[in-house]
Image (cartoon, rainbow, N blue to C red; front, side):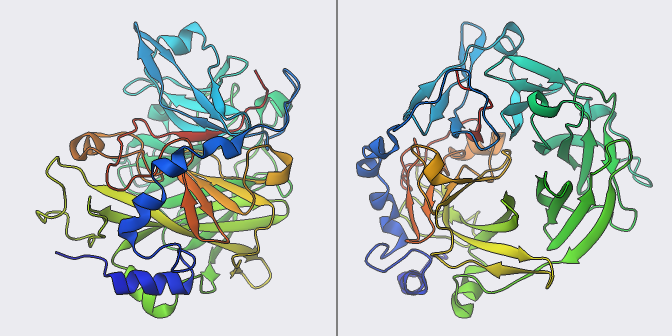
Length: 434
């Protein structure tokens, strides 16, 4: 049985991943730290101000956490947890949404990208205004040159260049599409395009995209790949095909790990990357996910999944986010410069699997903690695997970048009793209030 030795955990504490050793002595105590006592203290999100009814907000409107839909009497209803009000919001869905089983594949600028599995239905939906805009079917995606047998399967993420309410004529939808071989980028003009336009580079077919983000100021799309390439696409002229104007092998300075700790963690955790536009800066957010955490709080090697010690008697196992590092892009040196624990200041960053990564000034929004990374489950959205192993969707919390500690967000953090949350919650920034 492979496990995460307490000596290594203590060294991580010293090196700054979990803060001081007095905060995190060992991973097995993480659940105690983030258990019911923390859950009962969620009153810190009490609202101190209310926005005017139906006031139009920008993309940095006060965040909501979109919870799993509820199915009652053959109808579907969506609930959202408001960080500002510390209460649930339940927008009334229209008849189309109420009577369909849909999966969310994007949350951007106050709109959801909803996909009906095994059908051609793919559309944008604003749960506040109840307006929807049809998108071209992913089943009609053009085949890549020389890859006629590669078929689209699903959508990893969809983002918008702006809200259709603000500038519908110039609004672009960009998606990362999952295929049988690698991923592909494609874009369309919501409500006007009849098909998706594939963003293709003949020299780089079959690459895997981690995340994408659009800069409205530069009119550029930044995309990061799993082989550490940063692609820059020119989306300035929507009447022409986007152009790949730069591919860079991105380098980053060392983060909060020492070399010795990073080397040992290499086989214990998975890194996930997010791109975030913060004002004039492009940020790279690295998430550290311990992939196999037993019910005893021990960390198991990623190759031990068939070990009898991998799961508890009830078949449950767990994975858990235990840290973040953040870098700022330096375009002149083509590097990402590490931001130390005190560099975030008033900034709060929101990341997740399907949601558009967003950075806001926490002081402008009640209930948002400054210097924090708000995260939802980054590796699970709802699948047979989650049902078999009895976990998934549970990896949600608030990471204090300065103290290197995790506190709960709506759901309790309990590594010993992971809860299956299907589908995984995602971040939503309403364009209007109810």
